[in-house]
Length: 91
Image (tube, rainbow, N blue to C red; front, side):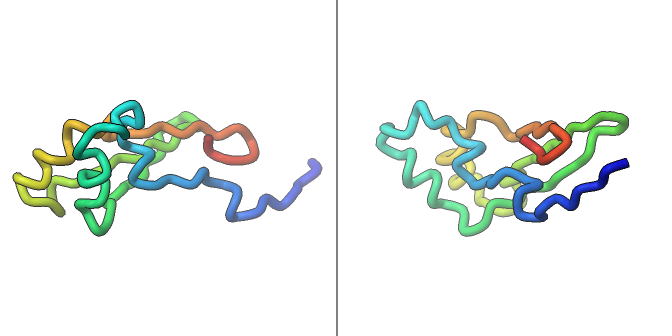
């Protein structure tokens, strides 16, 4: 087999808080405010058993107050992002 070393920095796409937010709402009055509320974005990663998928889950409930969550929730597109392995990286 011809093994080729992969660069660690290319294995996973850059994931930011904005990755979970609905960019179609970016012109809304409170979008930037909601995006800036949390000082950290707790994201967990889990491999799906028997597949090439890596699921990332945004979990803000333990980090934000109920009031802050109410500000952020309308702008979240999805609390999960699934990345698939393409033999080079997760995309």
